[in-house]
Image (tube, rainbow, N blue to C red):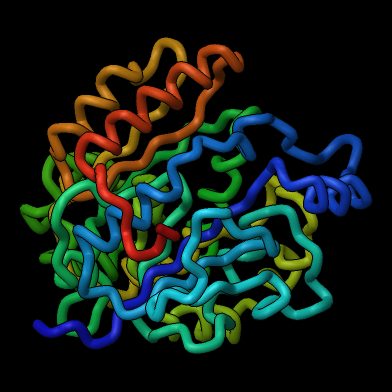
Length: 336
């Protein structure tokens, strides 16, 4: 399959930008903001995201780099594949400013020149080995793996609420058992791997209990965003108005869920990438670095966990060395 025009979109924030900090302080709520430092700590590895794209996904049509306004000093802003997008370039004025990724994510379809087919990256998700456009889209449909899931409630984890919100939309419009019966070949496709067991165990549920959400880049159709905005404008408009994260926000998960449940996707292996969380009693920094150096999958997500600043600085250096091991040369997205 030839590349029909697949774009990448990445959100990035420089939490150390004094102008951004100054504006954020004007709107900072005293009780609602998630002010954990890891939300904005700089891992200083964004250049490796661009190196990975250039080396492992040279077929990409355009990269839409979404930023509050700050730009890395090393970035070649004149690169023909790079489209620098400020929040004010695509977000309706009534939603600005926002210091949460959720309003930005659910309005990505408004980016000028964005292809119908695009892949959304968080800035902690990277390509680490060769990819093909068919890893992300086939027959003009998004590629994905699918499985049911149960979200175990924890009041300290905001994403639990996002999962409930997203599955609520699905259950409003789709009949669980009719969908599973109609699309059983996709839900039980061998490429879903061990996650098929989750689906089997949860089949007795009366409604969709949840959908497994791996923290990896997601393939989207711009028309999916448009469709859901038409159906649920008030809900998405409300999330878009939030300056900071709110536990009742709707997120990109509603669009992924919609594509999966409507059958508007093609199966791909669940082993395309892996997500790590760097914090005590979870994934060790050594295992993350080894995974990168050995290029064990095509994609990796590296979640910032609870660690003190000394641990953070040490882990950051190790991650950079691992990336530099597979991507030592500057990309054309970097200034010489």
